[in-house]
Length: 99
Image (cartoon, rainbow, N blue to C red):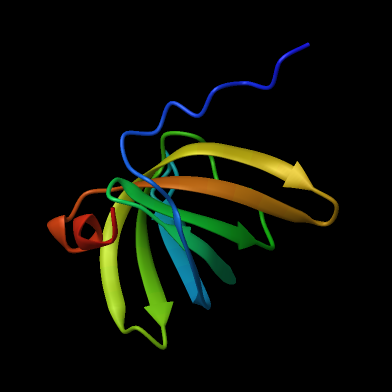
């Protein structure tokens, strides 16, 4: 069996930092989770967080120490042990300089 081909439009760049995410559910309740930044690309970020985040959720993303505060859409969320790996597509040109 051959490994799946990476279909990304731009390369990932490993990056470390603390990440905080916030989103509202369909009832308007605010949810938050924290974790660590894993990488950035021209389209968004990869993160590892404590709690699952619904695929398709519009999230507010804060990254320290970089000081970023942006929004993005969760494209995937998969369990990895007691954490969750997220792919968040960025909605801001700022992330594109890394791609």
